[in-house]
Image (cartoon, rainbow, N blue to C red):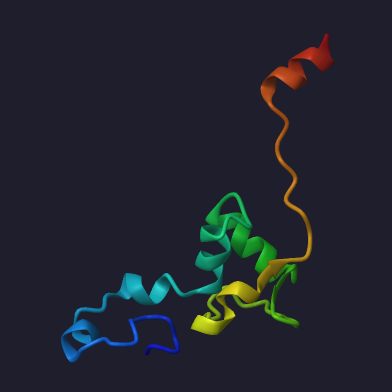
Length: 96
C-alpha cells in the first residue's frame, strides 16, 4: 500500500483499516491530473486522458481509472498546453 501511495511508509494496521474509498480514488490518474493543475476541471482531465494527451513517464495512458503509483506522480505530463480562456473584458473590447 505504501508503493501505491495510499499510506505512509510507517503505517500501522489501524491506519490501513481507516482507509476510505476517497483515499483510493485520490490516486486515480483523472484526479491526479486535476490536482496537479494540468486541467481546469475534473471533466477536462478525463477528456485529456481519453483523447491520448496524458503521459505517465514515456507511456501514453488512456484510462482515467489508472492507479498512479507513488514513484509515478512526478512523471505525469500533458502533451498539449491548456489554453487559458479570454477574459470577458477582452471579448467586449474586440466587439466594439
